[in-house]
Length: 306
Ligand SMILES: [Zn+2]
Image 1: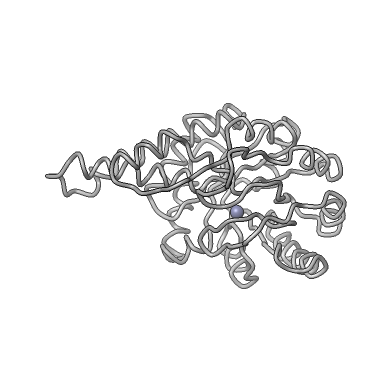
Image 2: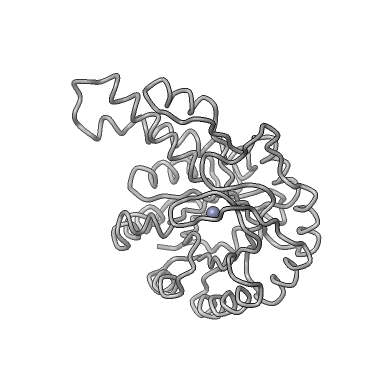
C-alpha cells in the first residue's frame, strides 16, 4: 500500500488553485464508489473515516477496507482520520498506517488547541503523516461532532495558529455547518471575504467542512420513495466554486453520499419487492454515490490532476 499524504496532495492543489474532495466512508459500498469515481476522473482523492464510522464498522474492518481500496488505485489516495479529539485514537491511526489525521481542538481555548495540535504534529511527523487542525467552529452535527453555533475563524489568529503548530492544512469556519440542515434562510452565503483574508494571511491549504450540496434531485428521489426530510439545505454549487477560487483546497463531503446511498436504496427496494439479495439492491446505491463523487471532483477542479 502506498498512500499519498495530505501534505503532498494539498500542496499541489494550493499551487494549482483547485480543491481535492474528501469523502467519508464507513463501509465497503461507499469506499468502492469513492475510489472508482476518483479513478474514472483521474483525480487525487481523500478517503476519510470519522470516529463514528470507525465505531460503526470496527477499526480493523474499516481500516482493512480502506487499505485494500488504496492498494493499487492508479490515483493518489490519502487515508485520513476525520475530526478527532482523542490523542490515543490519533496515535492508533498513525501507527496503523493512515497517511493523515485531523486533530479537532476547535472547542478548546486557543492556547490549549495550539498545545495539543503541536503534540499531534510531533507524533505524526515521525511517521511522515500529515495533520489537519481546526480553528473556529463549524456548526451543525455529524456523528460525534456537534457544535451549536458557528464561530467564524479570525484571520489573524489563523495565521498565528498555522505558524505555531506547523500543520499541513487548516479547517476554517466561514458559514458552513455539518449535516443536511445548514441554513435557516435561503441566502446560504459563505463569508468569502473572510476566506480570502485568511488565505492571504496563511498562504496554506485550507479546508471546508460541512460542504455538502444536498442536491434537490437527491432530496426529491428520497421523498418520492418515502423519506421525510423537511427543510434540508446545503451549500450551493456556486458558493462552493467561489470558495475554491478563493483558497479552499480540501472539501469534505459526507451528507451527500448518505443521501445518495439511501435515496437509491429506497427506490431499489420499493421498485423490486420480490428481490431480497442485498447485493442486487445495493448496486444502484454504489452507482449513484459514484456519480455524486465524480460530479463533485469536476466541480472542485481536481479532475485530471492525479
Ligand atoms: Zn467536519
